Amino acid sequence: MIRLLEAGFLEPEICQQLAISHDLSAVENYVQTYKNVLKLLERGFTTTEVASILNISRRLVDSYVPIIQEHHPEILGGHDSSHCHDGDQAHKSNSHLSQM
Image 1 (cartoon, one colour):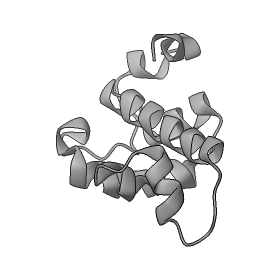
Image 2 (tube, helix red, strand yellow):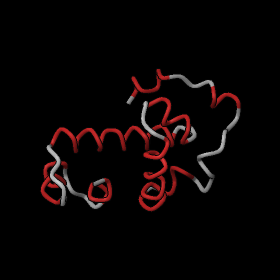
Image 3 (cartoon, one colour):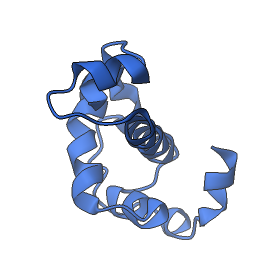
Image 4 (spheres, one colour):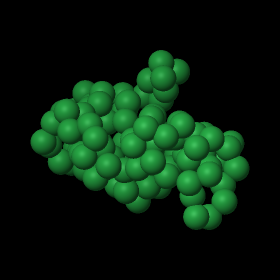
């Protein structure tokens, strides 16, 4: 689904392309979650922190990492996003979501 988004398809088109039927609201939810993951990783959060902030599984965040590396390599900047960053990174709060 997210690879279709990165290929330029809009949410209604993604619904039509999927082998297993998803309604538009489900696709929009997946897309928004992916965009939030992108924004948080871009801000320097680790994959563990992103999962916690968004209340999603670490496995889902990890599944997005190869897609992000392929389509947005500048976001991960060559570092392993699963490792902890400086102490100030660990103190970021959920308030960043309000800016998304």
